[in-house]
Length: 111
Image 1 (cartoon, rainbow, N blue to C red):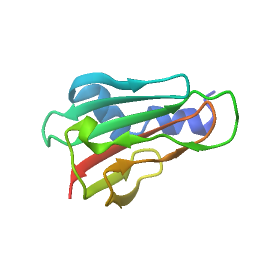
Image 2 (cartoon, rainbow, N blue to C red):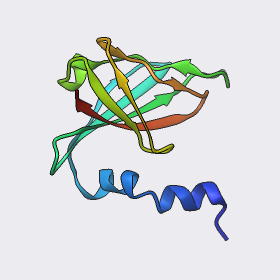
Image 3 (cartoon, rainbow, N blue to C red):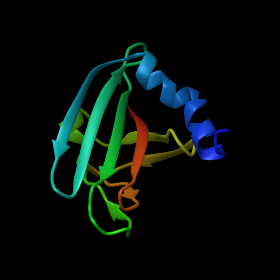
Image 4 (cartoon, rainbow, N blue to C red):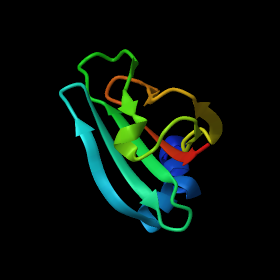
């Protein structure tokens, strides 16, 4: 039997869309502390962004993503694909907090 977290991940239509309908999937940056991957939605052109905290600490840390590295500029609308919540970025840097050894995934659209 699958636990609720795994089942929610496997049945998340917004996350499945990255696998089923994206292109230009690429690593944007990687350091000893974090990694950023991006892709484009085939139909809407939205930018998918996955951020990974690679630090040894379990503490949450911001992962800095310059919008220019994604071909975007502020303001940007942000959709958290795991929590299904919306937000916005009005600065040139998108910096979501990510738990240690964790990951988060977003869809960004030009605002």
